[in-house]
Image (cartoon, rainbow, N blue to C red; front, side, top):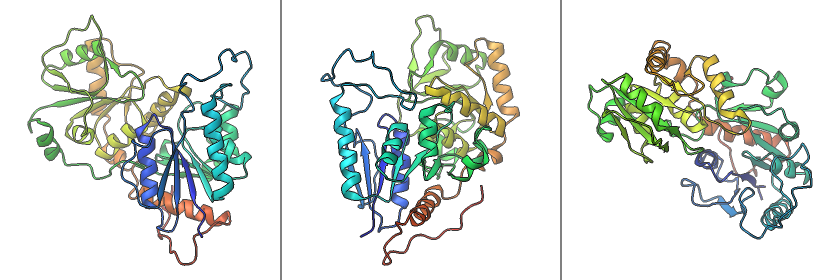
Length: 381
């Protein structure tokens, strides 16, 4: 019997679930996959060989925790490991029981350095998903150093400069992993979202990982370019002092973000991974404004985007009409759609699945002889 892969998914990000599903659907039919997550309602459709096991949240208290244990220090190798949480104990017990009984070939750890270290302690080879950010701390380094391989859901040209040759050599870069690569044509997308063919449209895309962009600076921006139609999607922070012109429209959460991106003449967005990949795939002029995240993830990603010449970056939304005019003009002037689209691989999920299978074979857990894995030429990075 073919040994399964495991996959731990951070339950607060749909982008994590989408790349898990992309990999799951690209794996050979003979490779079972068990997904561990605190939610089972965030995943796109996955193949029949996938099992989802719900775990208690490792980050959210549910009321049965023992209070007052914060006086015990947290070791440098851990990020989030509070004491006295029955839910965490149950989650770890579920994982270690599965490790013992399933004898997995690989455990893929998306986000959690602690789960990566747990797999290594339990003698299970793991693949760690790599994100941007200042991650030179002991916890991340333990997860990276102990990994059989690293998976970066972005192009190799967006690697951070301090990642050395050894780090890159064990990393599979996969630009576009987890997004629908079939971006609609501009004209079709405009028909779908109700924008006229000759309108200048500026899209403000605010992701779900934080509180979103503030309303007041967007009003200043829309007023600075009154000839354009400004549309926002996602979460917007309401400001009591904001005064908005008639050319800005807030649509909130939508199910067709890809259509809005494809329809836009320019996109203003933060630098979350899914957002980045969609804008790069669409090849749109982009004013990138990073939001706060742990380990300065979005700021370091913005630096990488700027260095690759695929986005115009500002540390925050412009605060004056002149600032907006300068930023928008720079985004248009430096736009390189060909360079943006080159950041997206042709078949990233298939490449990752092949890489995982090759890694499993090297670790002594190949597919059974009756199953033939997909064969692709590895694309040079």
